[in-house]
Length: 635
Image (cartoon, rainbow, N blue to C red; front, top):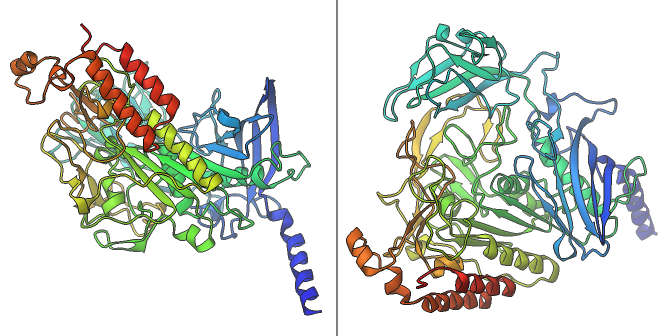
C-alpha cells in the first residue's frame, strides 16, 4: 500500500509541474522550404522566465525586468533550422557569432542557430533576441558607469561612433557630467579634455558642437590619430542581456524534449533528437563556457540540455551577464572576460583573492555536464590569455583536466586558422599589421576532432588523448622579447561585480589596476615554430615560421599586439638566398631538396595525422593532392 501511495504522489507531482517543463511558450515557423530531402525553417520563438526560479535567478537584473500578468519575464528570439528527412538523432546547435550563423546538415544532423545577443540591431538574416530593459521598482531608469576606448582615428576626424555601445545611451548629453581622457603615448598619463571641447554629437555635416547624437562624440579640434581617448559616462536603461543564455537553453530543451508549444504548434523535430551537441567559435565559444558555468545546461525540469560541446578559439567567459555588458568585446583594454573562473577544474585564485572554483561546479552538482572538446591555437595564448585557463593566475602548476574534458592545441595558428595551401606566395599583412598573414589552417584538424566528439557522445568512443603544452614538461615558458602579447591586469570593478560568474554590477570605470597576472606561452623550436600540440599538415611540413601574434604598424598601439592576427615569416627558397638575408633557418631547398621531397613530407604528415585520428581520410587525400599541385620547389 505504501508503494502505491508514493507512486501516486510522484504522478501527481509530474502532472503539476508538466506545464513548466518547457519555458519556450510559443514556437512560430514563418518560412519553410523543402529542397530534396532537406527542409529549411526559420521564424521566432517566445518564452517566459520566472525570475524567482533558481534556474533563472542567476541572470543579472532579471528581478528588475517588467513582468506579465503571470509574474513572468518575457523574451522573443529568432531561429533557423535545417532538418533531413531521416535524422541521425543529432541536433547540432551552432552558437551564432555576433548574430551571424547559418545552419547546415552534414551527415543527417538536425542543425539549428538562434538569437541570443540582445544588443544587436535586427537586420537581414542576423539572429537576434528581444530582451526587456531593467527599471527601478518605481519605473525610473537604472543608471551606471560605462567606458569606451577610442583609437586609430583617421587624420582630420572630428566625429567617432560609440560602435560597441549600441544600447548604452547616456543619461544626459551634458559633457560636464562625463569624462573624456586623452593619452598621447602608452607611457603617458591620461589628461582630461575640457567639457567645452567635446560633445555627444555628430559634426560631419555641422560644425562643432554639431548635431546632438547619443551614439557619437565630436571633438572640437579633431581626434589625434596617435592618441588614445577614453570616454567614461553614466548610461541608463540596461538591457537584461543574460536572458540570452536562458533563451538558448529553452529552445534546445524544447526541440529535444517537447511535443508542442503552449498553443499546440508541434515541435518540428519531436522524438527525433537523441543527442544535442553545441559548437561555437571565439565569442560563441566564450558563450558556451559561460552557459555551462552559470548552470544553463540544466533546463527548468532539471534535464540535461547539451550532451557535448566544442568551444573553439575561446579562452574567456562571455561578457553578457553583467549590467551594461558589451557582448561584442574581444579582450581589449577595460573589457571584462578573463576575470574569475576560466578553468574547467577547481582552482584557488590566490592572486585575485578568489575562492576555489571551476566552470563545471554547477553542472557537476546537478549531473548535467556535457562532454567537452576544447580546441584553440597560438593566437589564443598571445591575445586571449589562454595560459590563464591552463596554469591559473600564479602560473605555478598545470591545472588538471576533469574526465569529461579533452583539450587540443593547434600550434602556430592565427585566430581561427589561416587560408591553408602549399605555396611559396607570401600573403599580404592583415590591415594595420607588420607581418604577412599567417596561412597555417585549423579547419581540417577541427573537422576530425568534431567527428571524434560526435563519436564520444553517441557511441561512447573515447577521443584521442588531449594534446597541449604542459608546464610540468617545460613546454610553457615566459614571453620572448621578439613577441607581442595582450597583458592581463588584476582589475577592481567594485564590490557588486561577481568575478566567478562575470556577473553583477560594475561600479569602477576605468577599474583601478592592482597588479599584473603572469602569462606563459608555448615553447618553440630553432625555427621559431611551436613544438607541442596537434599540428596541421602545413605546420608539420613548414614553409616558414607561423606565429600567433603580429605587430601594430602605427597609431597609438604601434608596436603592440595587432588584434586577432597572427603572423608568418617564410623560409628562404635556397641556401644562397637565406645566406644573403642572414637567416639562420634552413631554406626550403635544404629541408626538402625537391618538389617531390616536399610532397613526400606532406604525405608523411597527413598519414601520421590520420593514424592519430587528427585528420579525416578524405581531407588527407585532398591535402596530398594540393601539395602535389603546389609550387613548392617546382622547377
